[in-house]
Image (cartoon, rainbow, N blue to C red):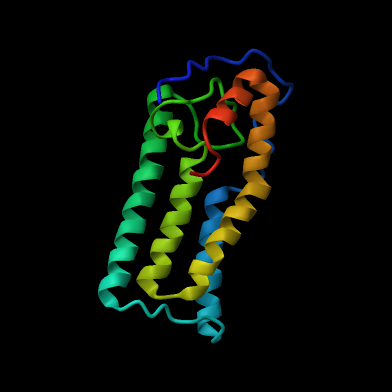
Length: 167
């Protein structure tokens, strides 16, 4: 998909940044720790995939997660933007991995959570992946989208229509 040409803000708000109060990466970490805790008290189940399939699933998920997060951070670095969602966004990034997903870091962290689940053969950690994505949507994504829509208006709405939220 070609660069969509989204440029600097056309509007500004009194407080320039999304109303995100809890760092989204901690959601994934807490889900992993919850899965481990559930396992320790006997409320989890072992993923019986066989060692070869389990290792392959962990490696594929982990590599994909690292690639997505790394690619997104690289785009932020190249554009001089801060990846923290509560910081100001001077322009909409629509290049690189952002041509395919509006939230590559969150998708990448979900894949890393899944990789940990496969590596540890912990079913609870895996079941908590969609829960993590739901919590991240609630505490971050919806606030980020509202902020970007207020700040960039029709330009952001066009980007939302062209690129999926997750995949």
